[in-house]
Length: 321
Image (tube, rainbow, N blue to C red; front, side, top):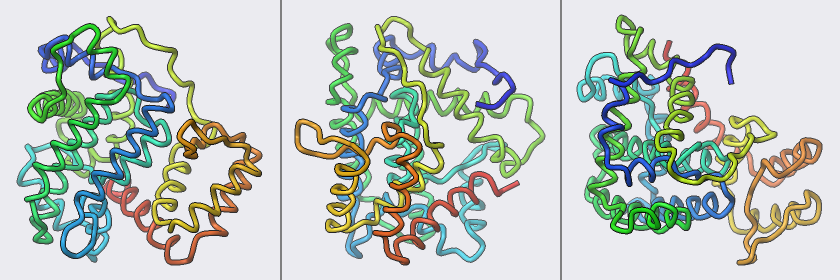
């Protein structure tokens, strides 16, 4: 966390969120940093990615960053296209589902609302990328349905259902929640920065999002929530970079890494005999060995692809000064 106090939402910026039904606000503030939620969300996102595979065998929703990297000018055309769709003074960050999965696995989401907002951004950006690369939009309704059904069945959602038995995370509710979060966040981001261009605003984007997400988590105090996770030992960017690399691994490589983590790093299997990749549970001294092992198992090509994904993301989010 940086030294300055983040600008907090005032009543008018927060109004779209305050106007939401109580059940929606409770859903937004659910904590999803427990191991069961993280693992289930990771599986849901893998499923979304698999479901979005079209003729060419590419997982479209997992390729947004990759598509942008095909452009020599790293997305200038994309930004031009998107700026037509967005109101003035709104920066744009391109995410894809594999980025969201990496962030979730690193406990990067303070609350359910932050995850829902990122998935909403993934779907929006897929639409822009599809216009550039002539990709199919037919996959989206099915994927949105699948996402809502799966996320609405997460065990933590029972906390909301016990208070609001009629709550259902339908595609309509998803849209209403995500749009309200979008409006509130963009209002906060632009405040005091009215004269900046979209690209200049991007430089403030990530920090503003972190501060905003932390506030989002406190929107509805009625839920009895467990103590929040204090934060990972390994910096979140490093964890994300590692998980992006692991997403390129073959089954054999995954098995080799699992053996190493169980024998050497002291991680344990869960009840389903699955290994939950919780980097924050690995002490710093062992983490060094784990990183070395991951690099040793991975191929040059895999390292190139994942480094490129990280590079594209950083360039889009931080480099567009």
